[in-house]
Length: 352
Image (cartoon, rainbow, N blue to C red; front, side):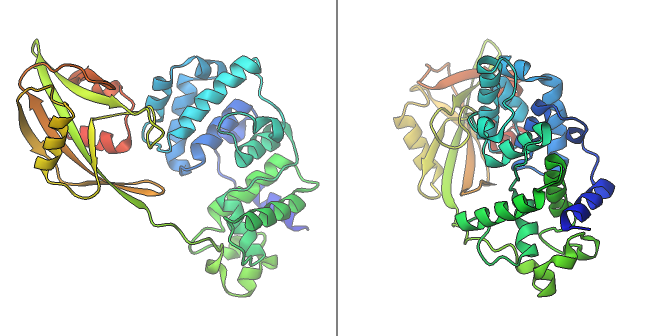
């Protein structure tokens, strides 16, 4: 039995029962792939069901507002995925009359769909013989060949795609691609792989060399940039209701189009008085007197290439402020409706 046939036989007996494996609807496959790009299956499953409930087809997703999409995505991180998902849905609903392109080359023309997602949709839904490359596939192939080239380099990616493409020949493309990814997820894991259960172990060079956990080789990671965020949680009372000042992030930075509080970013840890002086100069308080109700301890939040050190300064204004550019006032009982980053959501969970 060939390695590919052994892999497919293993997959048929061991694959997990997942809802997107019960359909070849490209909308469902696309949605699952985008959600799972930077998310574990057990976390992504709930989001998948929620999205399908809210937006059962590409037309309903296209008709939604971006704020609705971002709010539903809240907690998954990498929010550009949600913005691109929404943008591509509008492209498909409008330019393609709701019909998904059937080739990887055409799919890649859509916003946010790269090589991996295009190959997954094209192979699973339309039987195009194109190999996928994700972290699981890279790990399996690099161990199989004891690949000393970094898998995240151009040469490494090209080698892995070539090997996977050769193995894919004469197999059902969608089943083969899912089998290879599933093997990496369940058996050829990053730590303590279960080689005894692997259908490819007979040909695995890393196992023969007893160097399994040395692979995959990766390029050195860059040190994350440190950012110090001093959030001004500004509230005021009007007609017996408490309102909070919010900022919508529109710059090409983290969390674009999500909401957070006005923020004074500093180069290092700053004294509260320094932050308040800077906020006064920028007229965040509209010239009103105020009371500092709370200064939190540090919140840390890790992004791919950034580490955020945040602090929240709770301020209540003695009067009703003027508006300032980029800000909106939201009543306290409406705060849960805003799409916010996980860092802000953590703070809101303890807001008195």
